Image (cartoon, helix red, strand yellow):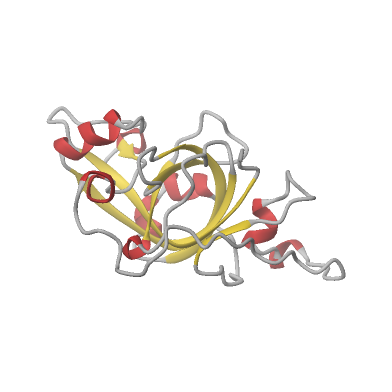
Length: 198
């Protein structure tokens, strides 16, 4: 049975990261704390060669991106967030790069963020969590622009996890009558961020 697009929940499995589950690996830091280097002023790139880091800061030309997790690799293409939400099964299991704006984030540890398309304030969002809990984002991430690289998974969220996410301020769209929901999970290996209120 095909699930209508409006029933897709747009967040990752946050209950483990926020409410329990395994803690970060020993010696893992929550953020790198070091800004990523600025792109070379002499480097001119054709639109097909635009890197995620340059896209994260287009609205903030004088700002260097903050890097959390692994450095983003230069992808062949940046996948539009709206396309991932529209046809999640087409991207399931794929590692890709995308960009957006942080709509909400975990206020306890920074272990998840809800990201919407940059050009659509009311657009459907995905919730991002971080690979192996080796890094988190700042608690003040809301409103920041991000470029991220990671893997897309499509799973079912339990009714308990839906309730947990809603209690932390996440938007859980299209819940099913039994309280569960389909989810698009994005597990990021790296995030570059600009425009965060510090």
